[in-house]
Image (cartoon, rainbow, N blue to C red; front, top):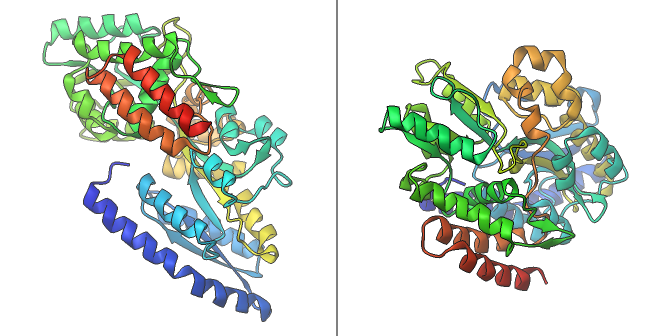
Length: 426
């Protein structure tokens, strides 16, 4: 999501070229299957960022258990928007170039509505997912009562704080503002609270979290409700953070990395970000190493807040031939098992979607930060589950940005957004 425009175009060209070669490879693959040779299964995923042997060993174990299969893996660009465009191109063309692939948490309704990913409810019943997985993660892959993907790892918005500057982690927005003000009175060079306010998807996550923190739900009964008192209060609060000096004006041009760097360099008291930042903050040489705590997001009431659900799922290409479907589903089961959850959490810092992983002794001992994230991930809420989310997000980014930048007040921007979203969804 943070790729520069020129990189985006280069990446798009590359992935489109990959898609165009799919038809010829599919023909070769079908011929191989027909001749009775090994089945070729293709798995497309993002980089895991870490020791590649951990994932390779996991995939090798799958091949040993399935000697009739040749497993090919392809690592794709990390930028979400580039991947989305690639999969749109490939899946719309009914490509058989890959079988199992990663999907962003907000793509499932879109891809299932288009018929591009297979219904796997027979193997992964919705009731079982709701029992075994974090609630938000399960909700994100179940569309109209059917399962269309399996959670691979999850992400959630959390609040970081300087434990050497704050007496206790804030539970309410008032406490956050008060603690930030007290720290800034001692050191005026500090920013009170940094977050992601640039016009992009990160702003949508921050805005939803603030709306939820003010008692709003946004998505209810399949409809998106934005023109509400809670939404006006939530957006108004973000704008007020800037006008009252708690947040610097620079947040309106900040993404995750700008806020992470400012906080890590010791220039802020509080930061909203994703869990990935913790590893960076605690690296040797980090100015704030050993001085950082984290907690769930604050709310008006003081109840633990709901962070926006992020993360990736594994889906089955609807064009995968019947003779490969069962083995492809076995690969999804293998990579999303409890054992895989714990292994990838320890090796790569990937937050497990399975509930049982957070009680696993290995995780608690070897990755205590991830184990301690359970209160936050268990309360994570998905963004609106709708096939039209990407179009909706364009509207939200524009109107939310207008509010936090002071171009339009919330009571003007939200009716505008509601009108456009109603046209998209209805």
